[in-house]
Image (cartoon, rainbow over all chains, first blue to last red; front, side):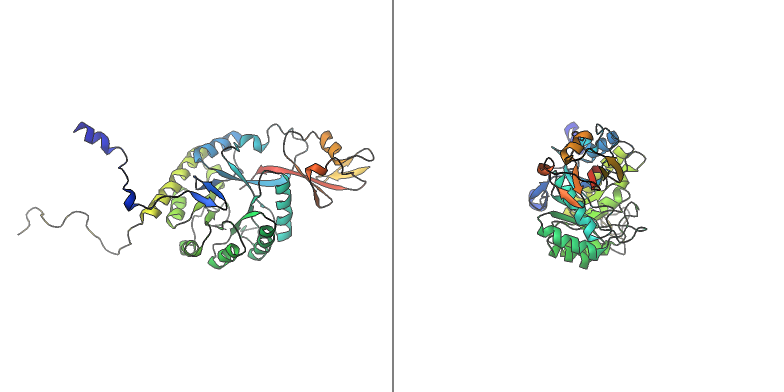
Length: 280
Length: 66
């Protein structure tokens, strides 16, 4: 009896015949246990960033390419705070407004010598930070030919996502909402259509605000999520990093488990027979 | 001679190499990539790349971003 009660608190053994095996995420030739990609910007300090990376259990973080501060000592540089035995770098082309600028940034990132993987980001509008699809496609085509592994940030547009897959991108990263907006998944139907059509991993990038947004994206079948602001600007960033890890895992499990269909009316969970005082 | 590094003017002795400039800037502690007049200069060519009057250099590294 005592043992039965103790067992209630533990996870039930999973019947493998009834579950879809949760395969690790595979992008290009690499395999990741974590489906949460995290940024390195906007943290109060590097120590907080490092803790957030630990709590999130991320295996890939984005970094930006910028002019070196010639007056700084270099002692406190970003890379000192990233454990590259555990975490792969994903340099971005943030701040680029045309294909040529993005390509130039990629060449510099490659010369830095730590990654041939690029988060391709070509912005089309300063106010919304929405991507310029024409320029993104142009850059992606060329960079794939040059041998880069390209993960493009793109509007939640199934046609644009398919075109990026077709030019050889290793994964496609549609936005949930504008960068840093925290608005969550604005067009779940589009995300679902993108996932359904894709043969490469779909990573929701940008716009996630809280854990339920991340879980929702994963429930829609996305392969992973990339976020920065939602963690870095939370009141307690490390706590949010942990929440996001759990949400991504929960959403993934729910997707694999297969949710029930939505019904307009009630459907009782307890038997309707054997009710007290019922006429037989 | 005068050159421009990351948007700032700098004076260097004539016939300085790129490697010498990087040494002077004490950039050994972190990875950098260098663009000279719009062309990326690979690390193995830093020592043999001579700088000249009016050159524009961009020296970049990785910083935090999303």
